[in-house]
Length: 233
Length: 291
Image (tube, rainbow over the protein chains, first blue to last red):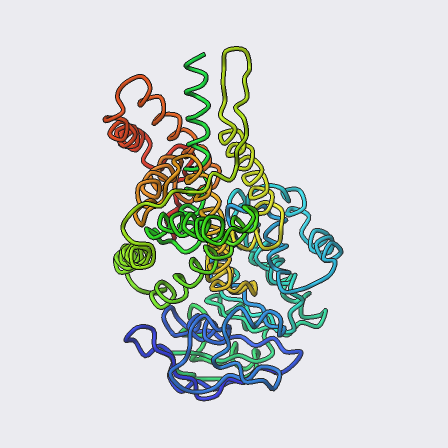
């Protein structure tokens, strides 16, 4: 479904992503894990068109999207929930959801209802500015907003960042449910333990390169991974 | 009664400032730049009216419509040619470019129309309305009425329509807006088009109020409308409306009761005083620091 081939991205003068190749197959949950600054977010931003690579190619659903502008991708079925949620703080919860469906035509009220059924907290606050929501609620709004575009591939960048453990669990339950309902997921996480527990396959990034890959289970049992990313136990 | 009639001409002048200030504030809110060439669009609009109505003898309605179209085209072209290549340039480069565009438009107008002022066609000739001892000029009534309608329409557009909401999204977070499928470039183009259309309407009213238009006619109302936008809180649409109207009233009151010569100094003095007390302007929001 998504194929990244030999990708090289510079962030200013920094060579942030080096010869990166990986793929996501339809129906999978794939996770990219790695320390801060390993190039995970840069990779995601390049896939969704916010950054453009120096070299390499990105193919999504058999179309070359290497240089496609970011705003052309939601209509193709790719949605990206960025790091730090980036909801529109001054707009209402409902308006945020409407923006998620910007590229769709036709009636979206059923889908908004569907999001509210899944996130009752959002319905209670639908007319409030998103800036008044808590961090966890904002993450749910960011995910709901992305789902409004009916994506085939959902890219999630650090969805658990800054959230209390109970909320982290909730966010991961939602990811699993979205996956069950047919959405393919590409997940970047610093919480490697959680990420590996739900991922079919995972890639480990270190200074812009993939250093390890395997199934979620293999990687969570690997001694190197345990030492480097799972707190050493 | 004198006070009331001064107040009404102030409101009418303020309406013109508000129409121009809306263009400043919307462009600032969305493209995060100060378009100092915005004032000169008023001049472009007023000259277009002169060409179509006086020179070509067209119906005033055609002239006003033509002025809207010409201003939109000029505004969008300026954005495409001068500002778009500077999207990721430092703000200072964009600011200097905007000043350059302003001089360019003024010089172009000089080249085409000469340096002398042309008389503006008085295409609205309503008899003054008299209520008791109070007399209101017909043009003032039209200016205020049209401005109110435009403001209401713009407010509805921004708060209710899909495109209006997309504009608010872009003004808050360009990258997140792109991820929603909103083209930031297209949104900026639309913003310039709307701002220029409003400026052309302001140009017609300005011409009607003063009766003349010259190559530099846009410069002073442009600066005052910019002051109005900052006064109301730059980036805020209700702020530009309020700021523009207040500025017109203050200017007219200063002219009537203090001194005609000092009126501009008083206007700018008020701006300084307001910004000292409330640096974000009357309705400006404190911008959140990005984490």
